[in-house]
Image 1: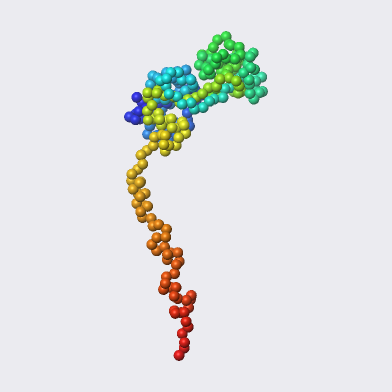
Image 2: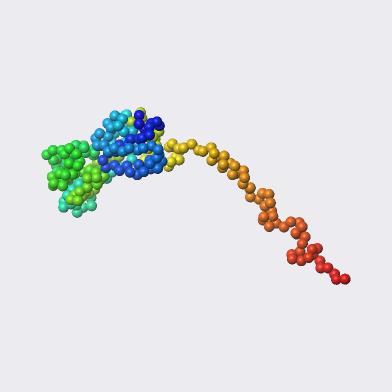
Length: 258
């Protein structure tokens, strides 16, 4: 399977709204000999893409269904409400879910929030995608509640968004098939968890034996402080010099003239 030690490439899927560029950059620095290929997949299809072996790992939105997929939660997103720029909510810094009681709230089929019951009044029909729902917001049909990254992804000049409280949030995770936890998957786990390249919990290169021998040889050649010849280096006078006067003739006594 791709992602094993015999493969020159690693396939990484990600859902809309996730920006994997930081992790990709670190991967390319640490594993330049392993090609990392990226593919964006719909959030609702991400788990099946991993199960079918079409990607070795992926950045997905929780929850991950089934016990056959492993997942490491990475971060939780802020939830916002997308509105026209001239909407009353645009004057506020934050919106409470109760404020949407009389609003038509669009609920697309690819919604990534785990609602028991969406707030507000339902639209006549459910848009197929978040992108379709954004178009309806621009047309004045209703408002849309999404993770902040999706609001940014579908940004329009005539729309804005505000943080909304007391609603579900979306959590992003790294996921992969449990039976395919390869060395390269472990490398990616170390990257997203912020481990250094020499972390004891991650993979690292074997030490170079030549470097060890060089280090030992250099240690043997070093002279310890206070070793041979150290007394003269410190300025300690010899017995011969000690018998001489300071700047006078030998013997310490002046000679008589005949």
